[in-house]
Length: 208
Image (cartoon, rainbow, N blue to C red; front, side, top):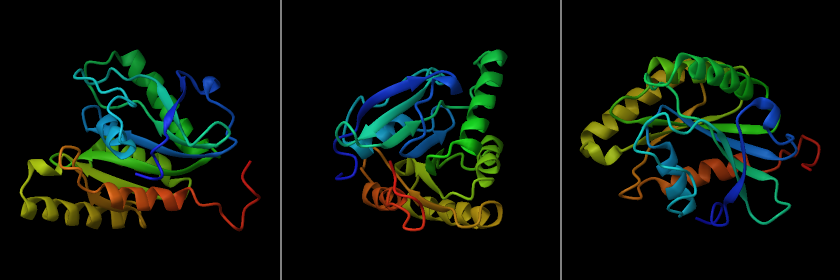
């Protein structure tokens, strides 16, 4: 996909103090552990191992930045740690709760949030918590209902409509779509949404 073709790893951060300066534009990807978040990033970038895919939920505990384009390009995809896996120690869960909530609510370079949900378990309490944190910013949200190939077309569309209906209440303006990594379903739609977020705002000062 044109926007993501040259994505490359840039930096990882464990704490907020490790984040790069918010000089460019960022789009964050968030989702429950084992929701298919890393696979979605790899599919969109047409790479097999750009984002780490683990068979053990809860393994990814870093904020990973992927730069789009060549050196000097300050557009980034940001892979946030998966959340909601019970086996992660309480100390780690509390740490990442603080990091994620602060990042989502205060990061000035953040232009939008791609929220990944397994279509068979959409809009969990933790997903709603992420939306509540991010709602403060007024920035857009786009939901990828991953693993849509696990349901038949009628079931998938019914789930999509139900998610859209709830989003209209809890996060007005948020959008949603079906997405399948094995079927490469929904790639073009996702890219169109994200590409729009990276467009310079004519009412804002020029991006660095």
